[in-house]
Image (cartoon, one colour):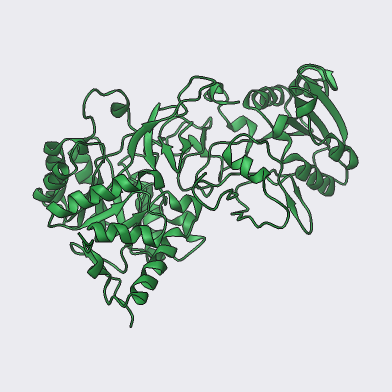
Length: 230
Length: 309
């Protein structure tokens, strides 16, 4: 959770995933959306920033699985370079990466993945780069099967489609969700999403603490109101 | 000179005047990672209900200028899980416990208080009569919260008073025309103290999607934005009450806390600021001690109501 202002404009910290974790530095990749990210973008090298973390449950990597596919939508690509590093180390082989975005301008990190040796598949809604279409269609063509691990991060409709492909194909699938957050520590219960578990004690899961990475089949994709997603 | 920091709320002894606002600190486990929660005057837990509650659909939270709108909807583990897991944790860590409780009828509040007292799982009870995020509040015409209606405050407080010997606090809502009325009703019914304020009702709309930013449409506003409102209400209430006041609403720093003491609060609670800085409440305890030393004030209670008017 990054503090973007000394005063109260804005008041809350901003949750960010690590884009890369390197020996001397960590990196965050973000889109400028509002006041917090605007302030971050205006910071200069040498300034200090208060970071509260690391928090939450990250992706888990099972190196006994043969095929690993990362699926990114837009700014959802942010945590995936770090994941690609980790998969490469654990599995001794870089993963495949599918990146989808609305248009070329929003398609990020392709070079980073290629430099790791990943096979990279691109898709844009307008066909300005890669194939014309969405990331989940590209994923489907890659024919995931029960010996595949999918890792997805992007807009909720993309992750829902990815979860459905995983369910149909028997592939394992982890999704990294985001939510408006206040504490980031699991105390305020502001960042919950609905799981498939029915009983009152388990139904609402905290993105900050029970996630942000979840088993895709544990999320109730029908409960989530996509009108709230950008 | 080592200033005295201990305060009393009825028979409740707090080692210092600082607690945390219910709902902002869970049951202490999350923040115990960062500091010794026993160092606070008390830990005020997230509201417990008899049965576990899942709470409202998301989105439950949106940031507004210098504040937060929340519509959590009283998600909580329920009394049984509190007694089995949460209370033992708090006791093991030496925390003083103010148990915030919520129910839909007086008898639910009474059962909660009785069972908490029996199990030694609370050092005081705080009756949440003022949560704005339950169904009735979103659709009601006219006052819908118990705490908006002095006669109902009296009814619930009297019932609780008869049900428990533990120190009894009544948490008041600011969503009223005159905070003195529910405050006096609680006092008359035998409450040992009142806590105020709970959140102010508010809302936010996304101008692109045209939808409310909260699934519940309305929510409760907290954070620095509400501090002047909270402070004024503490001032109003404490001047007519004989019983102590726990003041809260946007307290972020020790100077903020001191404002509330000067306005008449005997103790304070830190809420939203814990989200930004997990050890904010502890920092405020230290800041208060420093202030007293610096000004050579021997006892924090000397500050209560000491506004110069």
